[in-house]
Image (cartoon, rainbow, N blue to C red):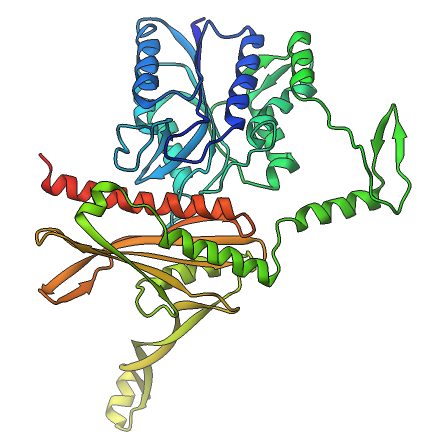
Length: 494
């Protein structure tokens, strides 16, 4: 039997991103679990929010130490910020910067190469990526494609458990992140027994606390028999200590509640009332909605572009009242149509002309022809028809505007012109933001045409959460800026 190795990383403090205080507790929780399983021969724990250089160096050193050994299993856990980037996923370290994306993050593909060098029989990844970035509108399953490719191309057997599919944010409760807490709670019902990775996945899938906020992504290439650990009495006791049952101190009036063993149990009516009131906190009235949308507009208008960007471009933000200055809004409309989230938006259609063939039957009047070829002949003639096709969308409720266009005017003649577009749709509880950038084609010194080569990116957040709106806008614009800077670096860099 080969060795079993574990690597755990927790990043809660960031220089340029929002802090994630629960992530430090997530790491402590997972570290306790890994230690008490007594399963792993060695464990690397990177806590205290490591920066990129130290984290990559420590990971590489740990893996090199076991390159010549027979490795049965590698277990990798990460909690912190993460984001989609091109056709890959990035783990972000404390010094992450949108102007140094490759240097201050770790690509999932790079991590795969490092783990693959150990030739493990089983590779396990548990990723609790808060504010997990953006997705391309061309596919709701891009993130799944990334991890499926990672699984099938690099390892014999795998279990990849990712906190949220697409680009949902992983939610952090006051104590732990929802996903990590659910992972830990799954062990509690297996006291004295072996728990399989498949059992953990099943628990998380059924956990109402997880379902309320996000949709986990699981990628598996294994037999469903692989065991995570035996849940010993010592581990169970530690979990009881770290995950205490919250007791109710106050109950809504109306129906009597049942008390057993000093713990309050709610009646069915009280549970319903509390569930409704709890979910109602995520919903906005019209006035609150307008305040949230105003926050979105201010977040774009007040976004702090990097020093290098401000040196190269003059930035002007214009609020649009329609979609005339945006292109490829039909892809957004198709996305809206395929998503049943009760958005205050309506898909619009136009008549499209297309060529078809029409069947025409002619009667043969010649007796000679009729005798040999029948009484009728059939021909097909071209005909022009029309059909309804999606061409865009409109909001069905008042809004401060429909979109924002950020024009980037170069300070030097050899620089390309760009525009960044931000638009959105929303329901009573959810705000979905679309963003992309396009290079303008210069037809003359004073005449430029808008390109259409980039896909819209999409990010979701709660409509009532102003901080989350700020973070989403900041993430989208930083990624657009980073993409443009990368293009300039390839064009003008050494």
